[in-house]
Image (cartoon, rainbow, N blue to C red; front, side, top):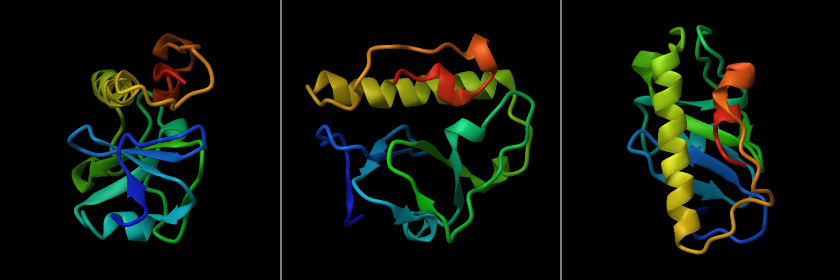
Length: 131
């Protein structure tokens, strides 16, 4: 992807996308979902802030842009509009944490705070991922 970098972040806010295989892709400026999906049309993109236990996973519209400072997941179409089970949410949180930690181990500054939220608090995937 031309405007995407993997683990090459600076202190600039980026839109972060965790792919099926756990890789982290960062975009330094807003990019349309349709552009991101060109490389994997059997996926959909969802915002981690909108994912909750036992709630259906919804796709972001192809016309929308990934917003800087947000974390997104690329999931297989088979998971679209299905309730997100606690085990699945935990697996996504682990996948995202591993991807983000991998970048931090390479001395990349992705975050401005060391605070960590836990899933127990609100039931959202975003709250289970270190900021």
